[in-house]
Image 1 (cartoon, rainbow, N blue to C red):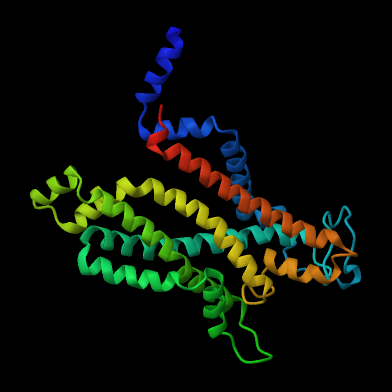
Image 2 (image 1 turned 120 degrees about the horizontal axis):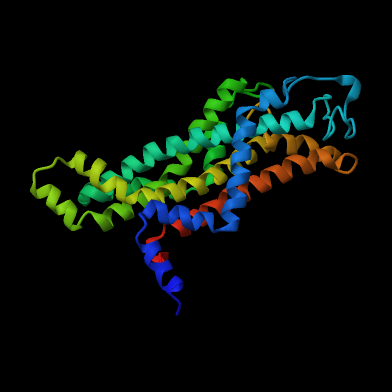
Length: 303
């Protein structure tokens, strides 16, 4: 064995966990490609109004179902609206919904999971029974039920703003149990560690132990879970919008674009292909990046 081969594992072991995770991510081609794609999505979401200043709802009934051209690179829909513009603004909707829903999920799931895992006993039992009740319903069906409850009567639709808030609440309530169970399991495994017992013996308050000692040590699996949940929320939002229960017009949603294009899929396949490919690539990118992130943060895979 050469001196270089012997020194490389020693050098990797001398790195901090964060630096070691970053090193492994940089050497993972799948993580680099997916990360670049996600960064591109963030750029598009932030600067969609710069890339397409004409907006996403500019109708041109003289050019309905127009084919791809210089003016409309991906064609135009049934109202003559530019498909590319709606696709780009749809990135903002999908990412925005995902970030808000995941934030609700983290606030609820992280709080309940830490409390249940740290205190145990009847508190753990009570909180986990609530979690089990939520798990007893299929995610998408429960979201449909929650959204349908606030739907107005026949012939009426929710305003776009109310539909957005309803979607936030429904998906946030659906996705927190998975994170709560994950956090609870991690907290149960760590609450008996020596540094936690030492903090208790020194008289440190429970909330300080949870925030300063317990939470930082379970952050890695939370980051991985959140990354993958973003993809799941995007897919759920597109599904609800496809069914007419999600984002309401005029806001652009990839699910709504897919639903509108189904009736003309044979004559204008690009209208269906564009949002379908965009949604598929985005979900794959977040899932694959989450897998790579899990491998990079797993201390058992360190050299």
